[in-house]
Length: 112
Image (cartoon, rainbow, N blue to C red; front, side, top):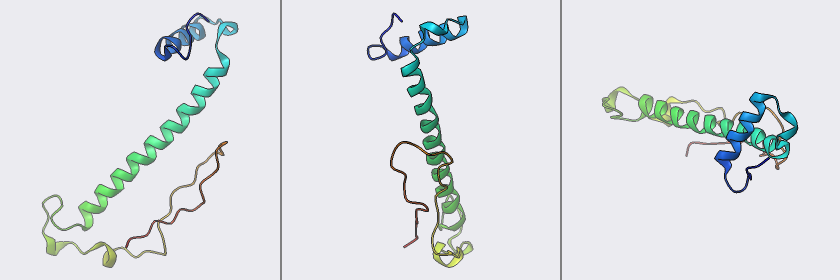
């Protein structure tokens, strides 16, 4: 391993990819590779949750908010009267356990 993980992450990642492609597994920085692969999955899940939350927000605005994006206020009911809430909205729990302290499940998110 000639490139330091802490000094130049991009160069390090390119070197690790080159080593993997050439089959030189004994030269891999396994400790940092395991850490990065684990973090990649977490980042992807958080990004997906964030994008879904934004999408749901836009869909709710489109359906229930007057004049969004060019609707007639009289055609759409308000959110509290149109959406029967069974007590709370819930976040989808993580599918795999993590080493961090888990969030309480489910997380109630109420309209007020």
